[in-house]
Length: 159
Ligand SMILES: [Zn+2]
Image (cartoon, rainbow, N blue to C red; front, side):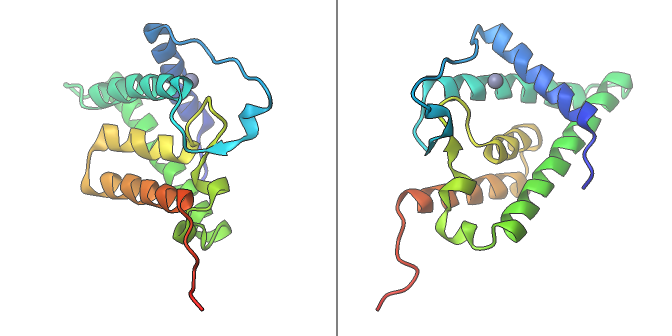
């Protein structure tokens, strides 16, 4: 789906406001850690999740704001944009990375460095925080199960 970058930028700005509100500035990087694939928790990742939590809460609250008006409409456009991004990322994982789900391929499911959680996971998590439906919960859990498979790789077949 074609993305409207202005709508996604609103999510990013809300995320950045979340950092300002929580007092969590960007992390420093050393020794090429940014490019390392991992699933380890870190303080920087927790700060990113908190900033996402802030953005999700603002969008959830404003999207349901009554009476319906410019603010609730604007929030719903951003929520729809996150849905489109999630769809595109699912299409990437299904088509371009066919088979990655079965084994939890690290380059698809792990975090790229110690500062930011996996973007696809973040978008699925934010969608679940905002919409909290059976579908958003399922997609998030399926992604997390694939991650777990990636941390404990099992042979695809036995001799
Ligand atoms: Zn951030």
